[in-house]
Length: 232
Image 1 (cartoon, rainbow, N blue to C red):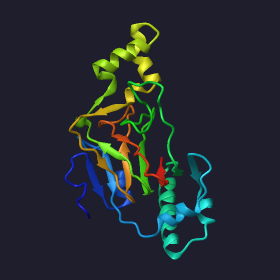
Image 2: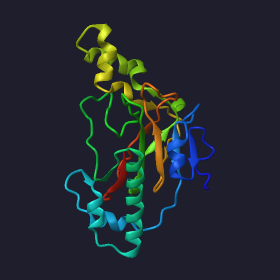
Image 3: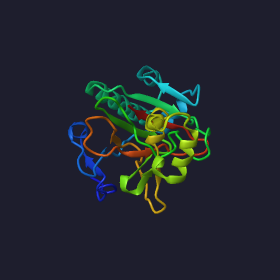
Image 4: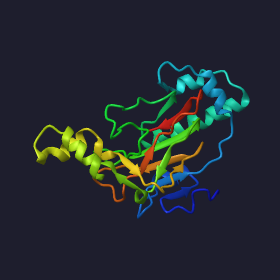
């Protein structure tokens, strides 16, 4: 197995789907990677699909209906297999053809879109699974290399000015508007790109979580190139 991620305490590499879903997060480790070198032509699949909006969900039936070459079919089988594995596990995977995500430009001092480093939160015990098959891939960052934006004094001051209510409700205001989920990377931080074809499981902030949630962000898309992303 490649050691591209193996010298990082945040990441543990696994070699099967069973290991991916059954390995417990612990200590600094809040990202699991089923490291794979997938065969097939994923670019062909992207070229044959039709994008209707900035984000188009692709169903298994959409994939099956495509007329593909042998290499395109190999890529399709990999995607269908991942969708089936996650569905059988009890997850609800979504395959998205992405032009771009919506940007948050409401405030000039804090961003709450997915291009900003952030963590996911859930009221129930769950994890985030994702795999980029084509296009730019997401980044994660060590929790020790980023700071919650609401704790940065100048940002916190502006958020207090924005808050129209009693001071004891300020923390609820931050949560309700998702400000507390976003992080600012340190100047010397070294984000880790998740690469293509690997299936990742990232820790989510929920009541039973024993580790810090994994800080991640969506990438800026490459000019003229769509992303094909599995996520749940």
